[in-house]
Image (tube, rainbow, N blue to C red; front, side):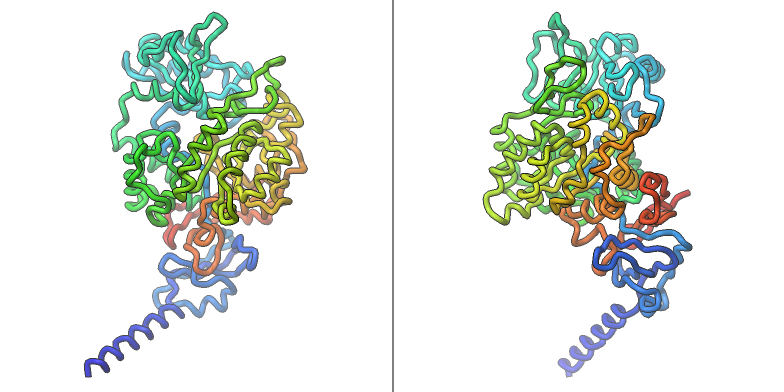
Length: 566
């Protein structure tokens, strides 16, 4: 009798499960273009979802059979449904500090700022800061300042204040500017040694100028500042999360976990905020190598779930090309006659010694390399890491990969490298690179998407926020059009333009590939998460340059709406 009852219970449950699988989709979208980014099925009439996953992609007639009593039918009314976009290189914590907690001086529109306008903005802001308290700001960019390449110095910043320490991060995040009060508070003098991986610039007389290179040097100032409260930090992260979903992003990286508060605090913060919904996007975390615990018994590759998971380690091998600190094999073109080739942060052996233990532990290795000299060094290290066929499948990342040679692209292809381009280099800085900083030959090598496609490589576009604004559809537009911003607008090497389809892949399925999530997100396919962006125009039917003007009207994650315009 008992066996019969158990058997009936099992059969009843099975029938219920089967009925639910066949019908009762939670939601069915229809009535507009559906761009799937699935090569096997690029278009569809409708998409059905159930319990946060996609259960059907195809004709509306067929998917309507999945309609149950509680199914919600959503008519797109001519809008376009596409996969939620993937942002594989964002400093979420860095953006929270730089754009929400610090004074944000970023200017990505025309005209450019001047030294006088920057001093005026800082002076106005300083009136609300008490003597002795820090004035913190972000977003100064000499390559987008008039006069061209003019920098803030301690002498200039002393015009803002001599009683309040000032610390300003360059837009690239590789350079900072401080006043004499900040140098005093940090205990620095003209005889202070440079920290490993950092540098204090001096004038011809050996005096500190107030220009500072790289994070190891920044920490000497940051460690003297009081931390914002937990509440302030969380509120800033919430705003960054809202910015992400407002641009259709459903999955993001945090590329430097631990860079601001240490790994333990940042891991706990991201873990909590992705689960309580305050940070609505999925997050893949990469620990900043400088913050990696000296004795790590707490963190393992793949730790976490699809809300927040640690998967990699990020190493910064050089600086910024627009900041003239990216490591180049030949000197920059600016100023005329310079011998400056930028800065390598490590010797090749030091870089290998940083990467090798983490690679052996199973972390995905991500190395920031902008200049061709740094790219060469990174590829040398990667060749030492990749010793067996399975190592090629680890998806080694080179961040920015800005000015590689054809030979370096070929080497990267053999190693299975998945480069990521800050594609805004072609737009915001294209004219500066081409006409002033690098010259035509090197500028034409910037972000060579078409060359990578010819090699069969995956690559992704990203913002490196706060370095450039979060806006994946604009990245796609920049990759397909390659028009620089400064008038008269010109195309930065038309041979490196890509199709709209390939540009969109770089912000969806290939960006997901870079984050090792292409089996779960990045395209609209049965079994993947119901992560979508609903946009007002079909990017596949839009002029490449005008894709940046497409509006995101709604963003859905796990089958739930997390953003609605207005």
